Length: 176
Image (cartoon, rainbow, N blue to C red; front, top):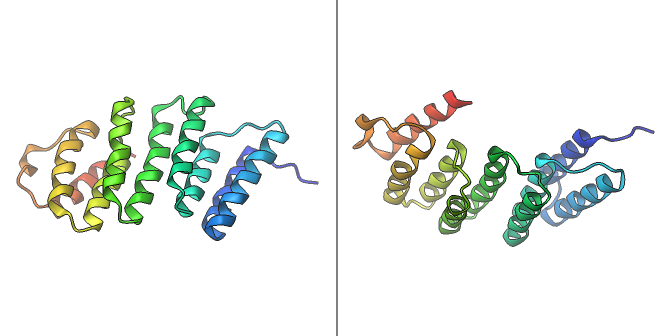
């Protein structure tokens, strides 16, 4: 007899995404979104994030991107931080799959759509290239994108990638 609310649906969707096999996670997330709407509850960015994560887990990146577009057309992504959050999930997924070029394409789409990058998105992109041992490209991307997030400390211009990432992470942690 307990009536779920939007928060419990979001928590359940996240739980299912992390615990169920990929195909079942997607099905469970879709069922939850459908049930929410039947109850007159409308999804928030948290629900769409769980669905994007489920699609990414199942490696259906086209559906993940379409879900981001659906969230935008539903008016859920009115805040820039919401748009960045969903795109960052996709960037992380491409990084886990060892596909940094596709992660970079997501960032390029974000910039073309005037979606401002945040530290998490930059860190995810740099990590995608780091993960495939493209260290020079990771370093140059970090140097190029850092000023979009925070002032770049010029004394780090010649620093190693390891030092740059550590300093960027410290900047990111301070901004939270």
